[in-house]
Length: 369
Ligand SMILES: NC(=O)c1ccc[n+]([C@@H]2O[C@H](COP(=O)([O-])OP(=O)(O)OC[C@H]3O[C@@H](n4cnc5c(N)ncnc54)[C@H](O)[C@@H]3O)[C@@H](O)[C@H]2O)c1
Ligand SMILES: C[C@@H](CO)CCC[C@@H](C)[C@H]1CC[C@H]2[C@@H]3[C@H](O)C=C4C[C@@H](O)CC[C@]4(C)[C@H]3CC[C@]12C
Image 1 (tube, rainbow, N blue to C red):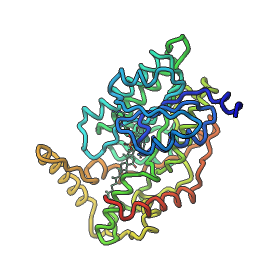
Image 2 (cartoon, rainbow, N blue to C red; image 1 turned 90 degrees about the horizontal axis):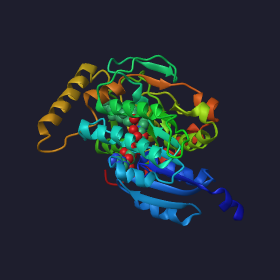
Image 3 (cartoon, helix red, strand yellow; image 1 turned 90 degrees about the vertical axis):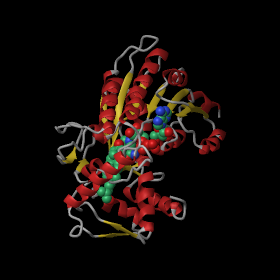
Image 4 (cartoon, rainbow, N blue to C red; image 1 turned 180 degrees about the vertical axis):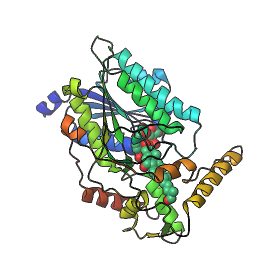
């Protein structure tokens, strides 16, 4: 017991700690970071599940706050050794305005960096996204690419643009002097499409399938492959990189790492069927019935309707020109940089990731959409 309290001396802050990924990072830190003494969970909306975490050996501090408010961020960061910044506005459906997306993703990240500098926090891990690379607006495939693969990263949509700007700010901040005179050490993790327990889009597809009598309709050719990664492995990568950032500052500082695991390369829809199939849904082949030009027309119509209805209501369907372009462009990652730099191996095999996700979808069954 005395030994355990002796080594527990680190304070971590997880921004966005009540989100889909954030919750997994919080739980993983409590399970796998033995040096943790306090875990601060900062989010705009705090989850009730945080209460049950407060009985363990680590002090869990829930902080309701907004990353766009510099003073709230500085107060939360003060005294923390490590910040894991996962908070972000993930919106490719037109729910939020571009201004709000920039405010949260770019200004929010600036606030986190400045808070580290002012308060003397030295280690910052940023949750970036594969979208800072692509798919680009030209629809170029990125096939089994790694962190050094040349790719024309051109974006127009506010979400990838904001993530790319925020990532750049984080990487440029590496080496900045923080309060106390030591250098800030930063890095960015770029998950591909994350799946697993708590994944809202998977839940939406599941409910849509139930409404359609247990069917989903294939819209994207099966040959278009998407990189996907299990949320538990993404969380584990965050925990590991945060630990190793403190040990190997020169090697890890200023670096980017794709998040990867053993999840198979498949089309977005076929991949989802790995979980939705065992839960009773089937994917109906419609390629001959719905040509791509018709999907583009429907996506454009959705965008028009969204714009027309905006004064009255929020119309934000899954299909729009941007999501169609992303879904229809191959983007897969093949790399071992995280293994080489900080010894990452996936904690969950594909079989584990799959069965955990299926169990979660089954539990979602019957719950309100
Ligand atoms: N879901 C994916 O497939 C995916 C893939 C790559 C990268 N990412 C990145 O991972 C991070 C987490 O994504 P997620 O899928 O868990 O999304 P999420 O929406 O479930 O979680 C984001 C969390 O950030 C919080 N948040 C939003 N605005 C905030 C603000 N102004 N102040 C404080 N907290 C705020 C939200 O309340 C939420 O709890 C994001 O930065 C996202 O860009 C997600
Ligand atoms: C055409 C539809 C018929 O079924 C399918 C539409 C699917 C899209 C809604 C999703 C296809 C690819 C997804 C994105 C991808 O997985 C990576 C992402 C990066 C991350 O940072 C945020 C989420 C997302 C943009 C993700 C969003 C949903 C898709 C566009």
